[in-house]
Length: 339
Image (cartoon, one colour):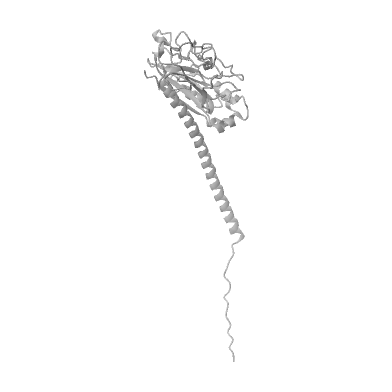
């Protein structure tokens, strides 16, 4: 007879998540995702800002290091010309103040010009001498590809003493000239004092992100001035820069993305022109030293106020703050060592 066996089954003890537990889990997960996304967004913003600053820092370093070489090798002689600004007196460089700019909504060409002979290599189609004509300008011609960008001219010059020199054709390679011939005299190099194109194409956009350029002088007496001689000592001429200890340069730089945001498709870049107009020259910038005396850093301080204080400078209130915050100001002294 066969036996039958029965297996007793235990009651099932498995339990599923309740609806409340699932909802709580979903809420916690959403909160975690929100926190992580905020952290990622903040990290992205910090990284983007850091990248923009690295971009402008790199641009400023290239420009200022190039200036350091050009200024260090500058020819300092009493028988040659310099295209330097000289306060109220044009000698014969761009004088202090926004002389060429109309201001308001019609301003153009609000930056300084500078040109001088320097013992550095320059562009040349022949065998140039060791001396070149060096010039810096922010191009103010809206039809130019270098509009509102810092340009550098490095023009190789012929050896002096050549025969049958013809200076009339603008493309003719020329030597260094001596006073009373000025650098900007007609038929020589008039384009270093305006926005004209160099017929030989020797201008290069060394600072495509630099839109503001200002310089001034540290005299051997310790005075900061926009006149390259010591008027307190009774001097009235540049005299080979014998009174000048150093040249101070201040530039404003904006990265390409922020520049596009600030321009917003405007080919005239009116926002940049407005910023240039509000960023004071050395002469008009308020002195912050004792007795309102000028000191190094005054220009940089005022330029930073323009981009950070829309109350004092309401013209910037409608400009994108993200673009303004990306603008960086740089200043450097260049000692004029003797050759």
